[in-house]
Amino acid sequence: MPMTFTVAVAGATGYAGGELLRLLSGHPEVEIGALTAGASAGSSLLSHHQHLITLADREVVATTAENLSGHDVVFLALPHGASAEIAAQLGQDVLVIDAGADHRLIDAEQWRRFYGSEHAGTWPYGLPELPGQRDVLAHTQRVAVPGCYPTAVTLALLPALTAGLVSGADVVAVAASGTSGAGKAAKVNLIGAEVMGSASAYGVGGVHRHVPEMLQNFARLGAATPTISFTPVLAPMARGILATVTAPVPAGVGLAEVRQAYADAYAGEPFVSLLPQGLWPQTQSVLGSNAVHLQVAVDEAAGRLVAVCALDNLTKGTAGGAIQSMNLALGLPETLGLSAVGVAP
Ligand SMILES: NC(=O)C1=CN([C@@H]2O[C@H](COP(=O)(O)OP(=O)(O)OC[C@H]3O[C@@H](n4cnc5c(N)ncnc54)[C@H](OP(=O)(O)O)[C@@H]3O)[C@@H](O)[C@H]2O)C=CC1
Ligand SMILES: CC(=O)N[C@@H](CCC(=O)OP(=O)(O)O)C(=O)O
Image (cartoon, rainbow, N blue to C red; front, side, top):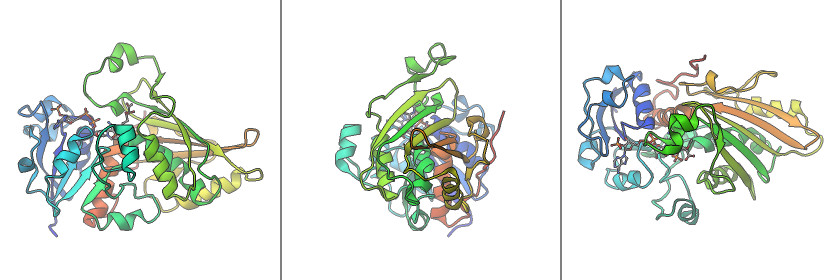
């Protein structure tokens, strides 16, 4: 094993690629190698990410197996489909970490239904907080990084599911996301005049492609027949996700029991925190960090547990989670190069 690992980033000009490079620039055990993209190959990295000043001399090249070869680690931050295509051309000896969705789902039929293409197969899922998942990630050359909403919704409900306080049926989740979650490609609904001062729901009615990923995670956590109604909301901010997740809880289950389950489940977690009572998660507190902030309540009149979760979609929701998984797969300390401290205000 080398002391320093060489790392390539495909999709370097996008938002996920940019966040990967911001974090990798401060990682003590990596050396940044090839940076690739699509149509913008041939341009300077700084023309896409002015904040990455320490990489000012770098040029973006085409996303080819040849340009990505010769590295210890390859991060894929490409659109769905493109990552599976290039991944199939990379050797088994290289650690490949896919920030996209191509290798997340187990069920090929669900993939076809929500993504409308052929299933590329299933890779180990890069959510170390799932029980037993650190062992899986410690012995893998392939990682499928979770979607940003599934990370928030899964971590919001994980302790309640593993403690048997909720069954995973009749879950309702509403999550507001910053616009960087939609990527950097120009779209009319993302221009300033449409987004500034306005929040809007989209993907309503069980059609968002993160639904099967959330249900898959609930099943991993013991839910026999999970169901979820998920509504994403576009919020007028660049980064951050605030997810409110509710589920039926049996009569007699009180806040003290619920809080204990969350405190126990996340006691040793470096990035996931149950906030002290009275504090509610806010996106500004986690921005730029790999932190996940949680708070819980029991709505006795409604008979539902309420869990609120905040994370940064580009950090724990993508690039930070990817680097956390990389650290585990390379045998490095899991938290290396990552911070749990946000940049508020
Ligand atoms: N943004 C987020 O919060 C999250 C993103 N993800 C996933 O990460 C991946 C990247 O997302 P994001 O950064 O937001 O997207 P962006 O649109 O911001 O970036 C996409 C990147 O892929 C490159 N690219 C596009 N098409 C091709 C192609 N055919 N061949 C090679 N390169 C190509 C683009 O290069 P060029 O400049 O040349 O167009 C760009 O570098 C996606 O799979 C997304 O779903 C996952 C979780 C959260
Ligand atoms: C605000 C916004 O548009 N968010 C994206 C989710 C981003 C994400 O997690 O990406 P994957 O495509 O890799 O799953 C969306 O809803 O499609």
